[in-house]
Length: 467
Ligand code: G3I
Image (cartoon, rainbow, N blue to C red; front, side, top):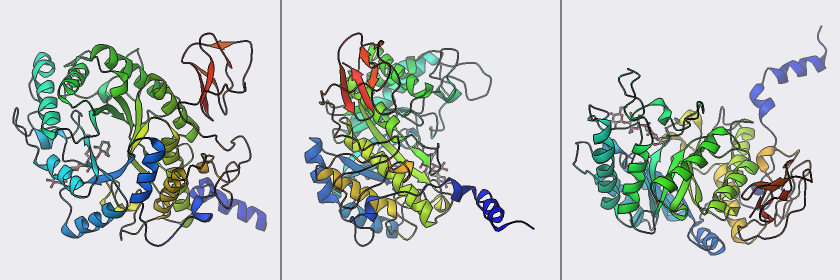
C-alpha cells in the first residue's frame, strides 16, 4: 500500500499546471483595489506627467463588433483605455483589395472611433506576409514589387491615414525564427523572400523589399510618427533579438531612418508558464539597449494565454502582466502598451485561452486590476517593484506597497531612467572591459564590469552600459 506521502507526491506530479504555477505576490493583495469599478483615464494622465509625454495604453478594435460589443467597448474606452489599434482593418487585404486602389474605410473607421473616445491611434500594419489581398503574392516581379507595389501601398496608406497615428508597424514579423547561415531576416521563409507556390525559388533575395517600405514610410509620414518593426520573440537575450538589432542598424543605414524615429514592437503573445515569456530583467535590458541607440520599444500585442481559469492561474497571469507593464513604464523609451483584444470572447485565442484583461462577461480580471495598480503606483512616483512573475520565493510585494522587498537573487529595483548617470557597483569579474555600448553590470550580470571606452552607467537595476 502506498504511503500518504507518496500519494501526495504522485498527485502533485500528476498536476503539472499546478506544480508549475508559482504563488505570486501582487499589489492587489496590498491595498490596491481587486474589485469594483475600474477607472484609470485620469491615472494615465498622471503617468504621462511622470513619463514626460503621453502614455498610450490601449486595445484592439474591430469594425465587425456587434452593437452590444461596441457598446461595452465604448464604456471601457471611456474609463480604461486611451489608445486603439485596428485588429484587422488596416492590413493590406483591407486597405488595397485591388492593386492601386486605396480603400481605407475600415482603417479610418477605427481611427474615427478612437478620436470620438478621445483615444489615440496606431497603425498595424503596412506590410505582412499574411492577410494579403488576393492579387498578392500574384505574378509581380521582384523589381515591380520593390519599385512600385510596396512603395505605392505604403504611401497610400500612411498618407491616407494622416497625422493622427502615433506609430506604424511598417513591417510585421519578418525576423526568422531560426537564425542560420548569416541570414537572420527570412520573412518567416514566406513571401516575398520565397514564392508562395512552394517552388523554393526566391522572389526577393535581399532586403530591398524592407528598404522600400521604410523609405516610403519616412517620406510620407508626418514627423511625429514612429516606425516600428513588429515581431514576436524579440524582447529577450537571444539570437532572434540580436537579429532585430542588426535589422534596425540596416534600416537606419539603408533607408536613412534616424534611430529616434525607429521602434521595435514586442508583440508579446505569451503563455502563463515558466519560460514561456520574457523575464522582466531581459525586457528591461532590451528596452535599455534600444534607448542607448535613441530608439523606442513598445508592447504591441499583449495577451497571456491560460490553461485554466483557476485563481492561481489568473493571479500568475496578473503577475506576468504586471512585470511587462512595469518594464515598459520604468523604461525611458516605452510610450505605447497595447493589449491584444479587449476581452476573452473577442480574442483571437478564443474564450478558452482566457488571455485578455476582461472575461467573457466583460468583467475585469485580476490582471486588469493589477495593471491598474501598477499604473497608479508608477504615477505616484514609487520605485520599481521586483519581478512578481518569479513568485514569492524571489519577489514579495510588501503591505503598503510604496516600496518593494525581495529575497533571493532579485532585489527591489531602483528608479530607472535613461538619464541615470550613477556609476554601477561592479558585480562581475574585474580586470576585463566591455566595449562602448556593451553591458557592464546589473542584477545577474557576470561579465566584465569595466569599460574599454566610456564609463559604466546604470540604465536600470538590471542593466548598466558603457556610454
Ligand atoms: O473577414 C473574414 C470573413 O469574411 C469570413 O467570413 C471569416 C471566416 O473565417 O473570416 C474573416 O477573416 C478573419 C479575420 O481574422 C477577420 O475576422 C480570418 O479568417 C482570420 O484569420 C483573421 O484572424 C486574424 C489574424 O491576425 C490573421 O492572421 C486575427 O483576427 C488577428 O487577431 C490576428 O492578429 C495578429 C496580428 O495581426 C499580428 N500578430 C499576431 C496576431 C495574432 O495572430
